[in-house]
Length: 159
Image (cartoon, rainbow, N blue to C red; front, side):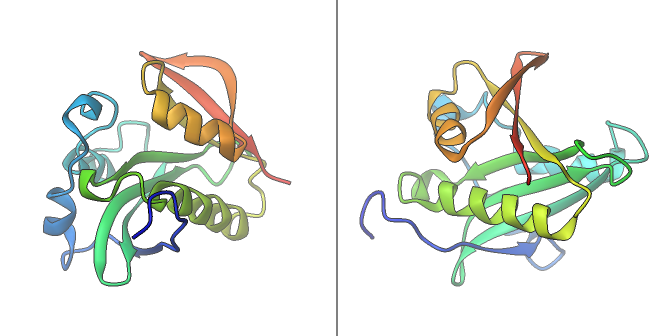
């Protein structure tokens, strides 16, 4: 693989067939404070910390047969702006190879195509997470000015 090359990623729902593999995904040690472990993201599906009206969809990110990451979509389909990307990680072994950009693109397009009412997609990012901030900025995400805990809220408008 060539560093920086963009790969196509595919998503598969995180299920009883692949959840244990998803739990083994890890980011680099210096990134561990920036994203929750996959187990926390999966727990949100049942705990519903954001309320009963929020739906959580967990996806494993694959390059062919290899799981390279995890991403979750959370949404309230009665709104135009509560479409979130959460728990987005690329395993430390696959970082820097274009998987993050490919997966982000795929998720944004998937949300926009599935939810025609959606006018913006949101995510949160820590101020110190320079790599993620740069990825999101290059992709077209903009800061909203809102802060949740220690994370800035960013959005991308959907046309």
